[in-house]
Length: 251
Image 1 (cartoon, helix red, strand yellow):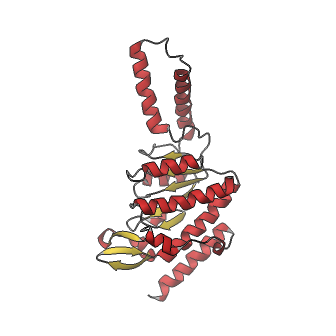
Image 2 (spheres, helix red, strand yellow):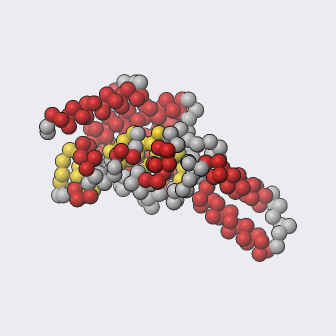
Image 3 (cartoon, rainbow, N blue to C red):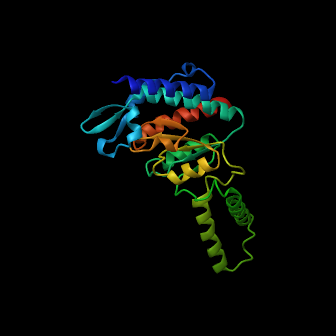
């Protein structure tokens, strides 16, 4: 390996530690566990984003292999930063719309009492939050009216229409219905798939952490976790570490 990539790696490590203000060695990530979870599998070399080259250690059978050691270091650094965010009462918005990740994203968010989006991204959710908040409040009002039996005054046709509206609201806003302010941090399982969310967060001054497979532009994120974001085992591994970190602060 040439000296230039090594220098870049060292510089990035120093920058990450400067962000956290803590020594990343205090939090241990087991590389062997990561490898077993398949975190290091990338995409075919032909799909590689040029800026991900720095995080690739090899190519096997035309598939990029992510440097697991780097992933461990960068995940550890992010978790240290996450600790600080949670200690200050901050919120992290989980976003994962891949079919294989929807349930895991929902469970992780609910277990940590954090907001989430696991269906299509709500355009304008961060950049036009006050308008979105009004829609959420409308949804909550309708839901409470239904639970209290206050919709019986409407005709059957009107109630059917309201039920459809409630279903739509639940699909769109179910994971963020308790949000009353924008989050301090947004987690993107796939920044490429949710590029609009990444750009909205950047525009709103919200820190972005992304699980970047080898086809992703890492520049979309403030915190990069180079890893497989397609495998269920890899997704579970990363989200479990994030969950442990949040619960370690809040419980």
